[in-house]
Image (cartoon, rainbow, N blue to C red; front, side, top):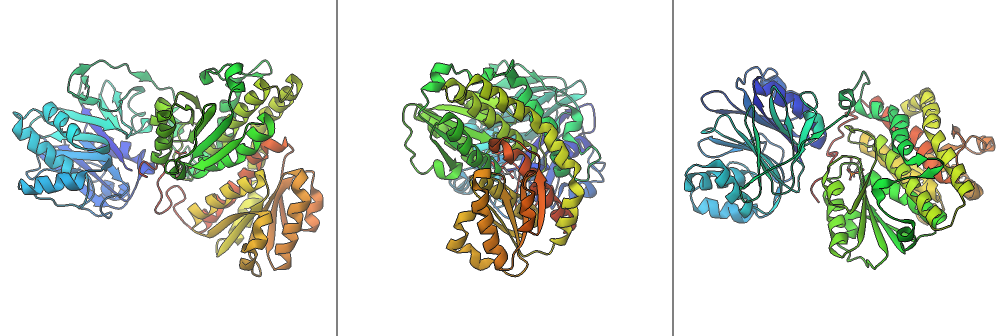
Length: 611
Ligand code: G6P
């Protein structure tokens, strides 16, 4: 899981590569490197640590002259983060340089063969075999880069997006992909390759999405594409109309805070185009009411926070549309031989559309002839392309590793789907639908109101920067909210935190409660109110300090708990969209209070393209 870039054009390459990599650091940030052709030879600089170390090393690229180059930001898979394992990797005489995102699964076998042929390896990476294998075929087949590349991709197994420089062809960048994302950007000043669109937005909005097995050959003013056998193919570019500022911080201290504040807009953008004349229109779903009525079961499959949205929406699909739902972690689903019968719909939820386990789960369902629907944020990503149908969340680019706005959009996309299914199956009337939609449309403004009250949470968070353990409890949808609140806190603050179904506390967890332990109780489901209050009393009796997140019409709760955050009134199915906001802010301010790297927490990466 890494980010790659490449540039060939009229400008100096290194500063452009550094800028592109800075937009891809969310993909990994334990080491970075660049290779640039300086007019005579390929010059390589690489280092461990963040990209800024590479920038310092090269004086923001100034020490690397040349108009063509490739770059890489790494998240280690094979081989520890170290200078020698950082990319680019190269052949013995440094005439071929390679950057790679993905995993070469048969690298050990290939490495053994190459070692027998006299190749010397420097690193522990899987990528280095690509550099030497290219060298081998390049020399064997008349020093033709395209032929060498075709030979290599027929030998390697696994996933890859590769950017390649050949010193003998100093005006060409080659790129190829399989199961790792890759785009090509076309501009007047030069052409680019990258793992993701934000890396090229500063230079162009005209982008080609490279498909599996496709090869790209870029010079400063030409772009050619070839299939897996090296035969020329035609491709159409797409025009991207994202706001360029969307990929920048816009004055916020961190991307995470900016993205938290973008939630009203992101949620509105995801809902609005799909509500027309008091009805839900999801054209991309391509399902008739008849087909919706034939659904017998839904699997929601995802990872991380996307999985948590599924846990919430199980209650909603079952409650509103009366369709049985199973929610699965993709890494479990793919290996547990699930029973997928006719009439099953598999919904894969993913911000990046590239999460390896989610993609594998999608493929498993497809192989078994099961209908699949992707709820995806990144346009043109693997899950978006491979799912039978795709419903986009319109969150825009999300950079902070801890998701916020994409999570919120995944929730509302599923609310729309559940309501549509409920209506098609005759479980709700037109009037009821109208009422639900009215409440949904109020969510963006209600989120804004919650964001306006951040000071209270900020102060509260400052008191807990030294906390050892924090617990989150709730029942039903409130339990699902707790799962996400707990994940947000632990991933960016490194405070141990767990979420429990409130009724389950007595079966073990309550023994962890000590004097002053913070327990956040989410209490938005009226029919479960009294039950959760009983659990709150139980933890308070054992010394817990309880912060409640509840509806504004529950002021009585102040008699029981120590502190309260109220959320505006909404339908019981939609409370997650509001209750999560203070929990995101709490996690954010604890992390800031501890002086941590909020946007790039240790050991994590945003797009997990390895299993
Ligand atoms: C990583 C991210 C999470 C995200 C999860 C699934 O762990 O840090 O924020 O929820 O991957 O990613 P996806 O792109 O499939 O939604």
